[in-house]
Length: 251
Image (cartoon, rainbow, N blue to C red; front, side, top):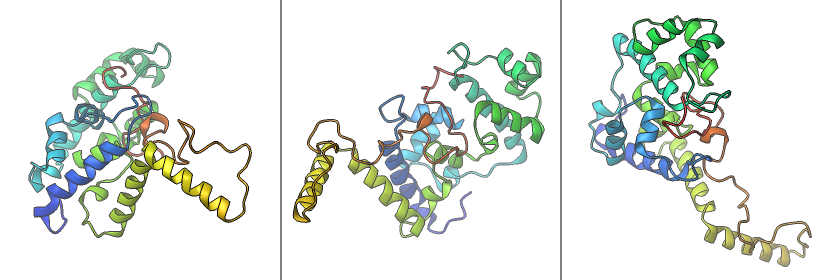
């Protein structure tokens, strides 16, 4: 359950900011926004949960539910299964298999299968080995649903739940809106014109090798939203190192 005050406004806050993330952070391999189903697959949650977050139809308790010990134990199996569904083998280009994972971790296929089925619970050391193999943070296997969804976009739960006037939220929102604006070719055209006028007024000569701001396809000087390895800005947050593969094509 969320401990934030103003719980009645929580669904609106979460929906507005999550939809902004969907709009701005796009995986480079897809060249389009993620769908709710794709994010749900990556976060290891139900699609209905993501849809409810975006539509502001969930209650505060449903948005940020508490995780009991038994639920946390089942999370490892659920999140591991998601990795098998969404990750590609570097050797075959197809979904990674239990045999490949077992060989890489010096385990056996049956033990890997038991972990996927929730029959065994891994030690901290073993969970870290799986995290390293799939290139995710070990916290991915135990993150609460809201944290897991936020992490798909390189953000934390705090960005989704804090009040609108919180400095962290204000700063992050401004950066996201800037990225969205800079991805608009019309805005890039205007910015380019302003730069040219500034250089002309200051007597500076544009570098002969500099690109023409009016040329189609110019970069705005800011990377396209989500245009990082695996569509995961900000390093390797919990559960976001997906290699850019669409759900169902990897794992």
